[in-house]
Image (tube, rainbow, N blue to C red):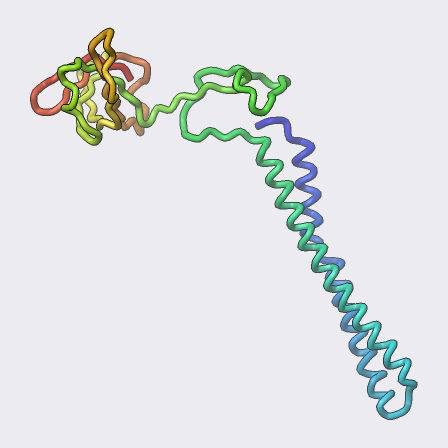
Length: 216
């Protein structure tokens, strides 16, 4: 969350304005009073007990009150839109992670300035631990034998007694000519975060064991 005290104050003020009902209630009261006044003078003018001008004046006053009520309603709608705009401005002061994870490094501290769009001024470094991404290096002789969705048993180096099931997410379509290898990428579910990231592991594909060095 960036420093947003000014934006928060502006949003609070806009919210208060959007909730004001006094102007509308006052305009409604004027309409009710002007309506009764107009109806009385209209009846009196019909019975020749009042000049027609007085009746016309009462009608004009009623229309003015109705116009004031409409203006009050429009002003409240404008205030509601301004509140929504201030809320959107306030939301821009909050930086949200696109995924659930853990903070592994912090580059900016309270009191420092952050420039929007400046990639060199990253604020936090996050790690996504569910799922874990496993990178398996395979010899080129195995190229074409793997496809997305295939399962593999993954055994982390620090948990040699545990085997986890992962599925292939993608296969590198090119072969590295220097090493004669290509890469198979796996997704390993880790909802309880009981498997750490950044460690070496071994992956076994299919019924026939094809163990390869991997990292996750």
